[in-house]
Length: 122
Image 1: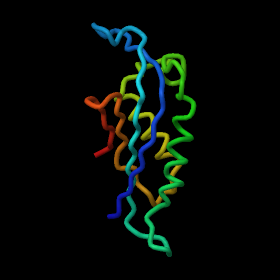
Image 2: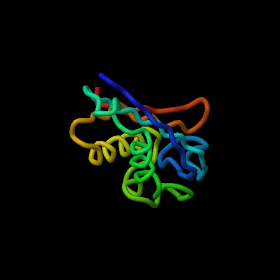
Image 3: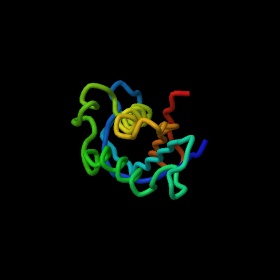
Image 4: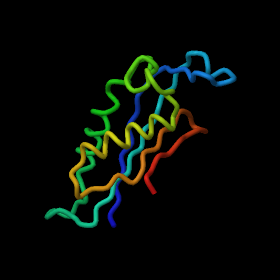
């Protein structure tokens, strides 16, 4: 199995409804998104998938979040924009975009140097 990953970022604000503490108030993060995919085979030039293309896919998913208030953007107008929910949303969206021969391994969301959440289906 060949695995490749890309990392990108966006800045956005959110608030966690029902949270008991500071995170219930509006605050922002410089979110870092890491996505890893896998393939059992390489293409004719020896690549599992183009890093640049994978990065473009991830950026196309998160561009609507950049410099926004996440609680007002679908689906986070209905569910809390937690790191866990963001990771799941990006994972599912990426899965829908990629060719069927590729598997999304995980999406990690870092909201700070100390805190991150990972979503995978394994």
